[in-house]
Image (cartoon, rainbow, N blue to C red):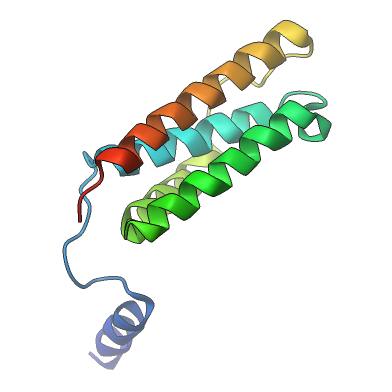
Length: 126
């Protein structure tokens, strides 16, 4: 019983467990999850982390997350990040192949996911 009370106190102190929780159907939560999956796939492309285009899109993700936090969407972002962190090690998709075409496709997918994230942030209401 003491463990459950301590755990509840930790959740309360961290901002978890209180108030309205985003559901798995929350568009912002889903868009954030997809952006993380697309980001990690892109970063798996040979040479992608060193490319300027990749760094620009990673910076865009950071800015979008900042905007979401300013709108009060911390819970949506945290839940999406937690879900991706739990699922990523079990991701069975084929890895990004070498070559410009594969990199371009992965970059375009990441960019589209960021467009979806921006739309989710725009529509987000507390």
